[in-house]
Length: 225
Image (cartoon, rainbow, N blue to C red; front, side):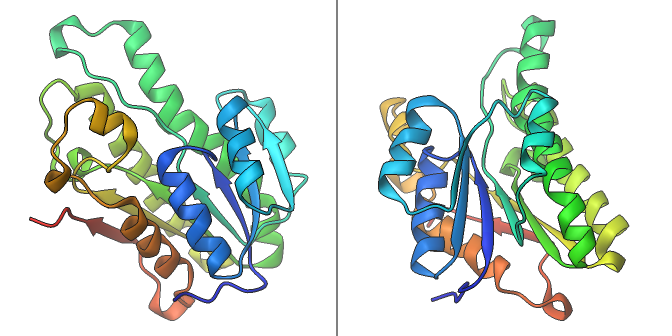
């Protein structure tokens, strides 16, 4: 098991299916958590996991970055995001803004929030979740989702290249399939074609323990088939 004792980690999307698995893994590894989320989902996470801070924030709002700057963290794990499907020729401006806002804008504000402290302490790690479609540039009905998740990867890898000399690193995780969540099960997805969120959480925890000289910048996680 990963050892993250003494590490303060900010986890966004708190209360979501993946974030819940990640939170459990990080708590088991000894990390101290700052939970960031919204509404009832955040309340469920607060009730389940010990946290030094619980922040109810809309990460699409630029003001959220200023709120996050008040907190000192060693790592950010950004799981906040959304998925929707629409035929490319029927996609609307609202569809575009929704996908960019949920997947890229939230990441941008979270990163802007944690970077000042990470740069000052000359150490920090940012982990973000992209998608298998972004890695392969495919996905029927998922052009906007794929584009927004590809932007997540491009942004994080660029941040890594720019700031690694200052001690700040980034890692992109690509789930190469749907994650096994209640919502995906209700949508009728085959259990065998989905990724175990606990295994994905263990992969994220592993990335968080890598030293600078053995850093992982990209991880693809596959279902068992």
